Amino acid sequence: MSALRIIIHLSITFIILASGQPLAYAEQDNSKVIKLGMSTALSGSARNIGQQLHKGSSIYFDKVNKAGGINGAQVQLLVANDSYEPKQTVNNTRTFIYSDKVDALFGTTGTPTSHAILPLLEQTQIPFLMPFSGASFLYEKSRAKIFNLRASYNDEAAEQIKYLVEERKHTKIGLFIQADEFGLYVESGLRKELAKYDLSPVKVARYQRNSHDVESALNALRTSGVTAICLVGTYAQLSEFINSARAKSFAPDYTSVSFVPSSDLFDEVSTPSSIMVTEIVPNPHSCSDDFCNEFLADMQANNITKPNRIHFEGYINAMAFSRAAARCKSPLKKSCLMKELNSLLIKDKIIKKLFLDIENQNKRNVYRSYYVNK
Image (tube, rainbow, N blue to C red; front, side, top):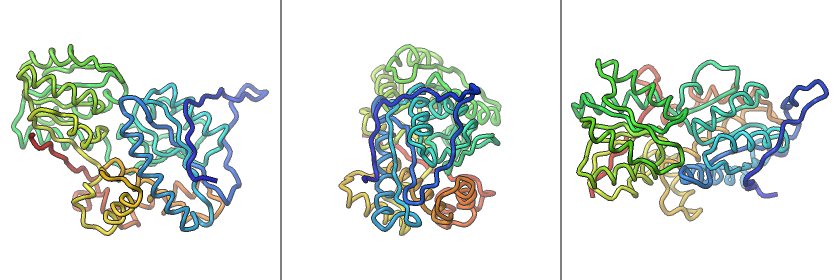
């Protein structure tokens, strides 16, 4: 059986018991297969994120399976397209839990999508692992079993405002925000960081998720007097905003959170611009660690000619899961899995180096990418 199965546009209704209660998730006694369910964007405005995350993870899991699996169990990474739409994420997640009976949910893309399935996570207690989001609810104490490696959007907001205020000397900062939970969580972090400098956003302009209607937001920010803009969205909309702004002789400094693949954003920007993107993993091309070299070699072996940070994050997520699961007896139990995942940040040298700033009270690392003017 292939380690990968593509599931597109799945939906299923809750199975209702005679008592009227939804069927609870139960762990499966299956020592030969470990099933992971990944609801992600394989189409739409966030498709590059979903496709690249999936590719990075699947390449690592394929390597694990070829080497005999995890304690003899093969990893099946089931992936379903949600097009970055929360309703479809809910449908996919129900199918993963109640039909596919996965051992864990893995690598879900986005904040609104992750937020939409929170009731399911709390009800079923299924592990929710390494979502591609830095929203604060993923790091707070919760009834759900959530594990994330990446820095939070609050961490990224702190780095961005420090850059704009202390390094670039801006005081008139605006926000271009996707109008959903993603935008709200990042906006909250940015406002808190601005307040530390006795500042607040001069103007906040919003646009709808998965739309390209950025013109009104651009006009509002252009006439507001801002000299810098924090961008919150996907690369297609952000690049359109930046290119359109330059065409109108508006050229503020920009920052963006890591949800935007910087390589994709920079490829789409067609004008000289000042852009800094906060990142949560290092650039694998400038990293000298053996693990980074291993990643690049595996990408090359799988004909990925331009591996980037999103591929790398997916690859790291798969590595982290595999290392934690390998420390658990077979069949894999969710209690052991969560315990071992949480111990990675204490015991695993590679994970600690990639994600923890040891010299700064073990805060999560935030890296940077800069756009080079064309």
